[in-house]
Length: 410
Ligand code: UTP
Image (cartoon, rainbow, N blue to C red):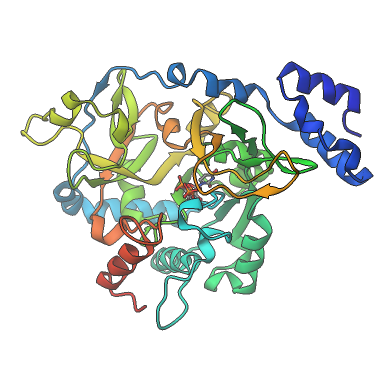
């Protein structure tokens, strides 16, 4: 039994959101109960954040953090790979696929992973990822637990799709789904949108909540039972993503770091990727829009640009460290988005341009909570083919080109 109507009114009044009950009397009993439950469980404290965004993301002092570069990796490849394979065979490495995003830029209502990048044959994004992980399973001759994060918006479709395709050859008992939390979506005045007469608009709360959501789903018990000590978190939309890469795992372990971050050499200093750095002496990532002239021009001791390595959303976290930071909150990012809503006349509008804010935590902010980090350089053409847009930069087109270069038949 959720809160009563008068309790709901009280909460909404407190946050300046009484309009949420505008259509309450028109709703069926089930819809009324669902709306009351949503009002009860929604965090409305976040809404205030859009009113003082500047203060939210204050930066500390940025200094360089040297990456382990290709020549050093090449010289130690055998030893790193042996260490990584040993950890994988002992079941100490798990993988976490972040697939809860909405993929709005791609413009499809389906989960991103079900997108077909093939031309003469079907080749789904999920399929590419499963095949990449299967390569390591074969190399190690051991299965790796794969945790898949979805959201309320795409959970059922994702589970159905992967089940119907028999996980593209992956062993079903090694695949575990969990759902991330949702956050309310508001207009530019901080008023919660309604996406239905009996439902407040919400969107996935960003990829930063993955470990808390994994724990809330009871899967941390499985992590402990199976002895997983490292979790390799990766994005759904990089079709060249190498998952549980033994060389990367081994390098992070040998260097005694609690997190490893795969990075690529930036094409130009102002390329739109987050650059790995130190912030107030701790590992961190400076977003491209926070790069000042001074940082863009800074050089390291070899005369190379000091902030030259961009993250590609592939991190290897120590589980012990993740548990240590579990109770700490992450900074909140207020993001402008196109949010479908019910207008004054009760009609659903799908805006063409951004019309409000959603609230997100980001996995990159977890890096700043870690004691040590190994930035590990990878060859961009071999490991980084993100699909954010349909055409142009980071698109289906550019990813196809890179897949071809890697010898994948489309
Ligand atoms: P993006 O930041 O590209 O967001 O996600 P998105 O929602 O997929 O796409 P746009 O911005 O709407 O076009 C990077 C990775 O983080 C995951 C995505 O699925 C992708 O793997 N992600 C993002 C989540 O798992 N949950 C989220 O709430 C947001």
